[in-house]
Length: 119
Image (cartoon, rainbow, N blue to C red; front, side, top):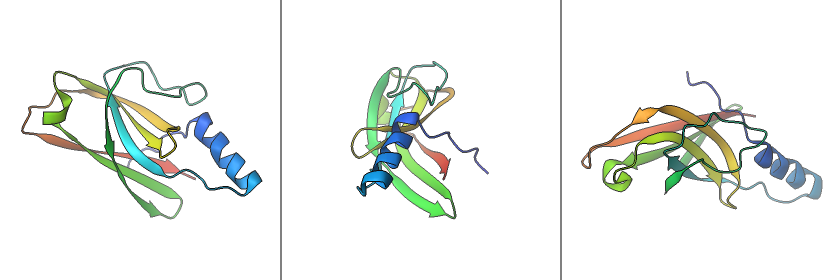
């Protein structure tokens, strides 16, 4: 089972506002990839350290677990080495970020990433 990612303070703030004001909570829309290796800080991060690509994502819910899935294609990475992955809401708010072991993809390959959140 995947270890849940701590939701970023910026996204938790958006949820609190939506609950308080009766607005909509922004949905998970994109998986973003970057080459930065700075450790994740849920309290201060609002973006990737060095983003190079965003792709549309899919989501699934099981109880209180939200799984966000996206595919990184080697043909889209260019010469970039993937070291960080993040989920962004449709309004551009960082939901959470994870630093991963360096991934270098050949153009004809792809890798599926899943980030899990618990609410």
